[in-house]
Length: 82
Image 1 (cartoon, helix red, strand yellow):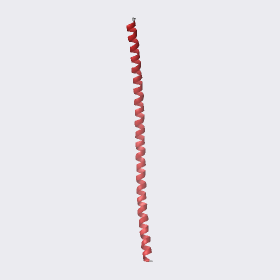
Image 2: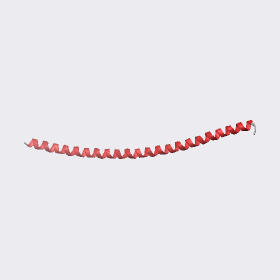
Image 3: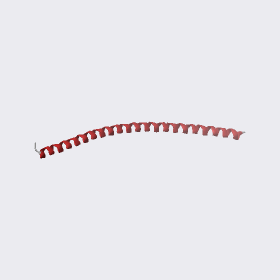
Image 4: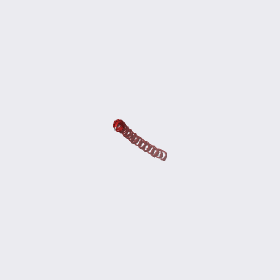
């Protein structure tokens, strides 16, 4: 093997090594991307559940407020008659 062929072989091996590294990095990035997508879906579901709970609590608060207002009106009627 002459020097030109040997040099080309070394360059080819370096290129092959770089390509393999890029493929490995690409696979790792795809895996990480998938993990992040799954985490995002989980957080979106968690957020949706929290928002539903907040809506329920707001409805409960509004219901209680309406009952308290009704009771205050009744008390006011009682005070007016005395």
